[in-house]
Length: 361
View (cartoon, rainbow, N blue to C red):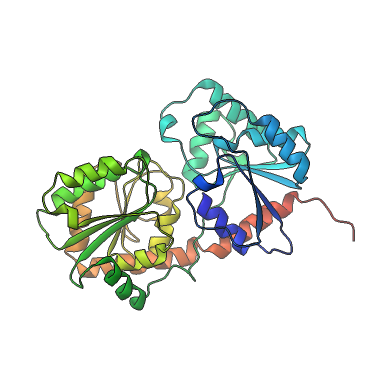
């Protein structure tokens, strides 16, 4: 979500749009690409994840001081901004960008009722995938035809296949020309289910020994994943934990396959970026993934947590160069047609302008 916001701020017309970002958590904890210089003022409430209590008063004060034309809240963590904006009579938008894995199956009624009330108070509600739209409509009882959909977009000027970058990036990572590189990008959290990928590599390694696995990102699951790797002889040199990186476009060019084993997703930016780079992708059949990746055409899908099917897909692509090239080409074509950054920006522009106050000239 944060990377998507950074992309949006970089490409919205700075003459027509001015931005103030209110972060709920301390800004230094936000793991995302840097915001474009001078494009937004960033304010912070400084709330820690383990603290409780309402942020409503602080949000009302912040809205009073910044005097926005439109307040746009994103996800449950910022849901109180809807009530603060309504209190100050602002036009407001609320959007959902994913599903909290802790409440994917069931959540407290109070939380569901609060979300339903917030949807009703907002001038516009949208989700980043049709699956998310239907999920929240079903959970809250809010009419699905009143929830719009704006897909995330990817900047194809930044993410594209580049043989020169690939060669240099692989050299820096210590990959030989014959190494088959599988990678994924994202925070190392339970919802990303990286452990399923490691179990699949157990099966994959029975057939091939020339592989490398890259994890770009960091998080609470890192220790668990590293312990798994330590228990496999020879894996220490094959599995690289790169931590948080800003050179994602270079890392993607170094890969041969992109894997996304998440338990749940909205529209995953890293999946879009991998496809724009021309990589064959293997993704779990959850959230917005099937909207992005058409199974068998622009990538391969597998049921959530299905180690065997994930391993089979990895083996299929590794053993069939024609399939690998075809899936990568079709993936890039799909991004160009359906998930361009320009289309996303146009949709946000139309949304904001539909609520903007009329100016007297």
